[in-house]
Image (cartoon, rainbow, N blue to C red):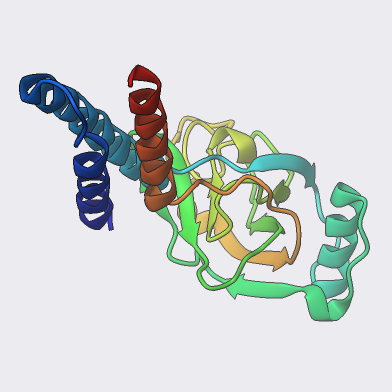
Length: 210
């Protein structure tokens, strides 16, 4: 997609730089515009690939498990009303992967688009927390659920134990993920959109120079 956008933008630049005046000046300006578009396309690709941490809302020490209890926690944390039909569950870790550079956990949920979700953990003895359920607003990329170890009291990794074993917690403690629709408002723009925006700005700058 980035390559196609780059080619389309170069064709646009060809048209914009055909004007009266010195051919050398036009070629120089064309080189500048191509470099600007290339930078825009690369930046767009990076923006699309990056994961954005979702918004933590509230944590619970759940006395009961089950759909009714989880719906009640989601409603309490969000201030919204949901029905049993709204609740969906992903058992286990849902293919969670860890980005060591960004230090974030990520679960791909395409084609689903959760608006709010909870992470339910198994919490045993000798841990620094008894909170086992964490509710989030999926506020960024709707096709991903993203969180940090710190947001869940290091239950997915880090120093979570009252004892000497700092490896007591890992992604294996995640029992399941439950989610409901609605919410997301801050999706990352597609690379094509950002590239075309960059080309438009370049064209506007050129027209002003004429």
